[in-house]
Length: 169
Image 1: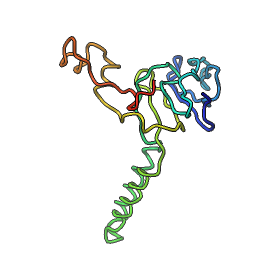
Image 2: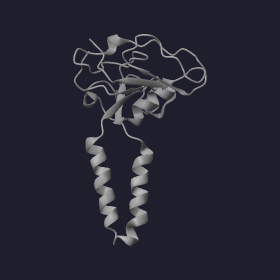
Image 3: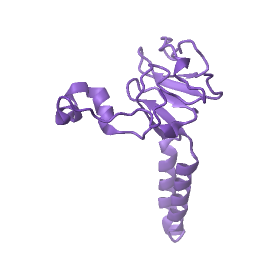
Image 4: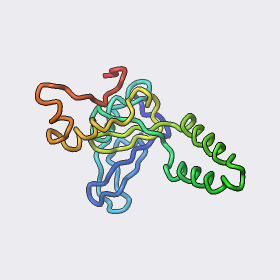
């Protein structure tokens, strides 16, 4: 169960609410660069033998979701530039912008987010074993029994979850 190289984790600092960032190989607690507060102690036991994650390394929770690992501002900039150039290029820049945007979807790696502590895991293999973001699961973690999902389902009904699709645990 070794942590893959070139992987890192980001999470919210409990002191100043800014994000700390540390390599996943560090077994020690990360330290916030702005206020110096210690973050949660990372759990290398959450990493499976193939290097993929079975749970969050920051809090140990087993419900996570994947998202694309590129800045949203870059994707928006592609669309804005294509739209600005559209009248001058007989609107071919819109097609070029669509091709660039679609290629980002296919070639950019995935990152994993924890529903409970909002830690972000970058560079880990096997992100496809997790589901994409589900608003109902996020609401259950954020609002608990007060969420609209829990009230709609009522007592005795199990809501959806964000666990691994292949039941790695």
